[in-house]
Every structure is written in structure tokens, then in C-alpha cells.
Amino acid sequence: MTEALTPHSETHEHDDDSFEYKILSNPYERMHYVHLTDELIAQMDGTVGGSPDFVVFLDKSARPVNWMVRELWDTLAAKQPDGTTPERPQSLFVNIDGRSKRDETPEGIANLRALFSVDDPAEGLEMMDAPTHLDDKKVLIVDEVAVSGDTLRRANHLISKAFPDADVTTHDWMNARPIRPDLPATNNPRWYERNSDRYRSVREHAAPGQEETLRASDPRVDRGWDWLAKFPEQQEEGTLQLMREIEQLAEDVRVGRLPYEPAYSREDDEERIREFSGMEPKDFYTFVRWMKQSYWPDYNVASTLTDETGPLSEENAREFARLEHVRRQQMLGHRGAKARFEFTPDPRTSEAVRYSEQLGFASQSLARQVKKAS
Image (cartoon, rainbow, N blue to C red):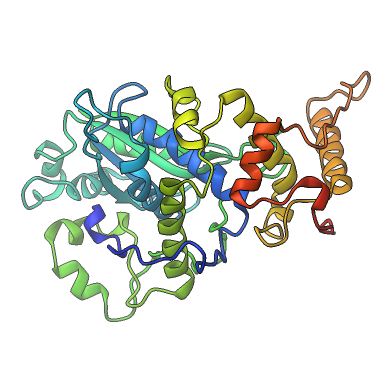
């Protein structure tokens, strides 16, 4: 239900040189995830449209997004006029996805409403007239990735029915919508695995013998049980490792080890670039372009590129760029006259090259050969 139920470490014990990323091992991927999270933080801190009162993260895969917001908030949230960091909106969790069908009867919607009842839930459909914490509040629903958009539309529909007086909006952290509906998703969060929960801190069902104890803990939990994901009795190592990596990622941004590309929605994005990188925006964005074409030419190959391997060779980077250009032209239906393919092996300015070397990224000319995945 609330963030208080989210397991996480309160300590930051990771040393910058000794920590090893195992899940988020690609440096551009980490940089990109911070950028996506800053877009969400800009929604939450009032930069875009006013701050919500509550943020509902959709279980189960959106939990890591909440962890990133929590870890990065003090560093990236827009400061108030007096220079202080605004209070982060309260995080809530509801288990809604695009595949499983929850009880959408009037009774089921009343059970969803009961989760956030101010008092012990009222009986039956009387709950629809009982006060909740979400009444007359701004509520932002967050999903970790949007492919068709069905999950967010469904979540918006259900939460709006359960809390008709709330002002409900939605946000997808990562947009993986294909250009054509018959094509696969263009991306997925690194922790997302359709048939595995090894990176997820919650499950669809409680462990044997656990349900009775959990449901007895709070009448709201008991009433809204079907709308909640359940914590396992013991977290898997993959989940704990992901938590550690997100914690370290935020520390790397704070101390300047990981480049920070601000949200495009921020009016002070250029000032932020100067503050965090020490570069002019025009130089910084040549670095971003180089990182993207050198470390993330293809989602599947991205996992093989790490700080240790260095970027793709110029030959492979060019080939991936060419294939992406052809794929995009085909998606857009340009099978006749096609746009000209252009590739700049190293678009960085001299300032961007110095910045790359300062952070320890290999120069393009010294890059190791990374074989393209078959």
C-alpha cells in the first residue's frame, strides 16, 4: 500500500572503486535511467503541471522506479524559493497490470477504495461513500514501461472509478511503444522479465501460511487483498543486488561519476548541465550522442557493453547505426526514396572528449571490438 512497506537499506556503504554493477552494467543505460527518472521527478516536484499529493506505482515492475525516485530525489528535485528540497509526494502501490483481471464489479472497486480508507473500511458498497486519503487529491499513476498503453489506461479507469473525486493523471517511465503495432517493443527495463520475479521485491501471491498473518494485520489490507502484491518471506539476491545498484547509481550522480542528462521538461536544464558536468550544453550533448551510439546501439547488445569492455568499435557502431536507419525507414514505410544515411564516428567536441577521459571512458580509437549478438 505505502512506501513504508518497501524494503531498502538506509545506509550507503558502497565504495566508488570497489562496487561492481552486475545488472545495470552498461554505463549509458545507467545514465539513461537517471534521465528517465528525472522526467518523473519533474512531474512530482511541480516542474510540470503542479506536484501530485500521491504517486501510485503499479506493482510489480514499477517498484524499482520508486527506488530510483527515492534515491535521486534530494539531488534532482527542483529546489523551492527558499533553497530547500520539497517534500516528496507519498508513494502508494497497487497491483494492476494489463493481463490479469481483478474484480471490476462494484464490490471489487469498493475493495480497491478500502485500501486507502481513512478509518476501518465500511461494509460492502457503503465504502464508496466513506472518506479516503485520496479524495480531492492529485494522484499520479506510474508504470515502468508502456508498450500498448493498455495497463495505464486500465489503471486510470479503475482508480478513477474507486476515487471519483480525485484528480488522476498517468506517467510511463519508459516508452517502448513500437512505431507499428505488429512490431515488438523497442526496449524494456533491465529488471523486467516476463516469466521471472528474480528482480522484483513483491509477488502475485503470498507464501504458504503467510496470507492469514498479513490479512490480519490491517482491515484495509484484508479488504483490498486482491489489489495488493505480496512480499516474499525472503528477498532473492537479484532483488537485493538491484537495490544496491540503484543506491550506488544515485551516489554516482551526486559525486559526478555518472553523467546527468536533465529532463527535457526542465527550464533550467542548461544550468543543470553546467553545474553537474562543468561543460556548456552544446559540448555535453555531443558526449550524450557519442555515449548512445557507442554504448547503446541495440538493447540486446547493451548488456555486453560495460565500463570494462569500453564502447563498440567504430565498425560495429556504424553497422548498428545503419541497421537502425534501415529499420526505421521500413517502419515509416519509406521503401521508395529513402533518407540519406549519415554517421559521424566521434561527434564529440574537444571539451566532450576531455570530459569522457576524466570519467574513464575509453576513446573511440582505443575501443575494444565487441561482437554483435547473433
